[in-house]
Image (cartoon, rainbow, N blue to C red):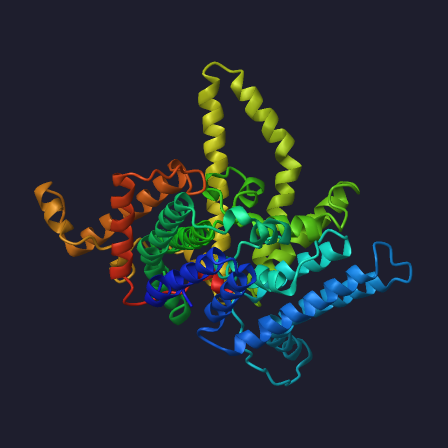
Length: 510
């Protein structure tokens, strides 16, 4: 089920809220949790009931393994506890491998060894990377003795709670399960409810009114790149800039919108869901970007991969190797394609370069600050750092979005073919109704193509302003006044009117 659908907004969400708080009001806490679990499973299995078998089996196996580790005691001298941990990790990694990477692995085996093994064409279950990583963290914490005496109902709801189920954030048990037990959260809190509605609506607006607009240009551009990779009709230099910048904003507002909606939904139920998105396009380095983008994935990889590998405690060379491994895992986690693997490696390499040059960068900024008008020079240095970071992100996302490494190379080659044309079909999604008359009033060229180009430029500039100058929805203070009510309802109505075609969130694919 999609957040941006009639059935979710007009049926599923109100019914979930009513049942959850109604059962709590009559003192049926377990029934309230069970109702939320049942609704979450309905949410997950709405499009394909087969998914329920996968997630329910995964939940049962991981809960059984965690309980088995608890029974071995804190120090299992016979190694049973470690054996159970290894079994749990193998099970979870194997689950992801089978559903997400089996065909990719067989394809590469066939290519390298000239074999002819059949592909299974397995349907990827929604959110499997998210709920599997969430359970890996739980199994590891159970091994460390950090999990509480949770019931199966509490654990199952922790894994399947619908706001964060299919696209994050990757929540820790210590962040969510204690909230299930907090009696202060069992009654409707109208401040939380209103804040949640406002946050959900703003996230919905980011997705439907902004991300989907940029998505039209992206879809057209990559369709052209697939059909006509080179020669006449291929993407031109300005078209590539439009497509890659549009994809950056599509991915930004799509993921940011989902994160806002998840947090807003949690607030409606009085649950605090951790921040997963902190204005990442304000970053002036790749290191800072990964401290702002997909925070819970970064936290997971740091806690459960980077630190166990030794982190930065075993010398510089080992630190760089560990960093590359973490970003390789990140790339593989995002998808079964060499594009994702190379995207992860490229970010790992740039992160290592950032570690190498960070000291020199800090000294340069400090030296610039001591010059006359030092604040100007510091500003210029930071602006250049921001520009380089943003452009690297955009170029790396060409690979991230591309169908193959070959397609990425072909698009990059087009940068060296001088052609400044822009097709109207590419920028049709930026059309501003009646804007032609505004241009005519200002005595500016008012051809249809000029209307579309102006709309494209204005949309890109507006997106930059929002990303760089506005507070994110986690920092915003939500006021329950007439202006907030009007703004929220205008966005909600605009989104509902736009729901004739439902677009999938990009991170559902990962």
